Amino acid sequence: MIEATLCFVVDGDDVLLIEKRRGLGEGWYNGPGGKLEDGETLRECAAREVREEVGLRIPLEALEQAGELTFTLDGEVHTVCHVFRTETYDGEPVATEEAHPEWVPIEDVPYDRMWDDDRLWLPAVLEGDTVEGTFAFEGGRPLDDAEFVDYDLERGASFEE
Ligand SMILES: Nc1nc2c([nH]c(=O)n2[C@H]2C[C@H](O)[C@@H](COP(=O)(O)OP(=O)(O)OP(=O)(O)O)O2)c(=O)[nH]1
Image (cartoon, rainbow, N blue to C red; front, side, top):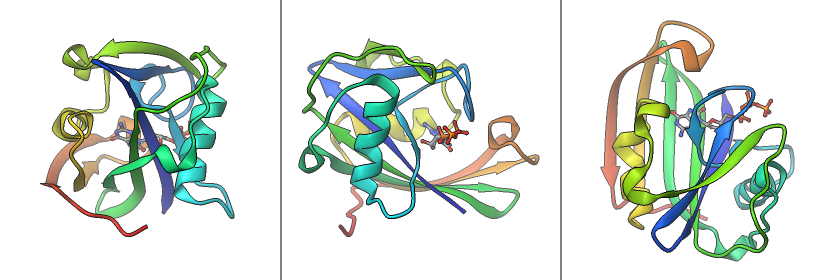
């Protein structure tokens, strides 16, 4: 099972998305994020991924826990993804080998160029709500080639630190 984070940086009416240039979800829009490394906390992972992928610095205490998403593939847990939201950052986004950053109006988030499940939970996260859900994919690896078939989603979730 993979443990990963995603981080959505909100500035006024805009959110910072990346066009992912390699790896899982290549060519799609997402928030910066990636896999948890040994010995780091979820917040450290989220801040590191934002720094590595788009060059922004985020104080750990400014990261709000906004979601816990479980992705299953053919009936088994594939990834648990911890979603963070923040309005605090330092620096300007820069493109890297991994990601092309883009400020996008929250009203115009390109859900047709994102993972199929994102339209179900990301609007709530961008409104400042919290979500907890399970999203079922079928059809074999890799996850981004599998078909999104079912989900269970709750808003207003609370998380243990
Ligand atoms: N928005 C969204 N993100 C997802 C979904 N499924 C899923 O794994 N992700 C996220 C979790 C991670 O942040 C990211 C994949 O991790 P990653 O970026 O480390 O993957 P990678 O294959 O590029 O790995 P790496 O070489 O960079 O370590 O995609 C989904 O359905 N929606």
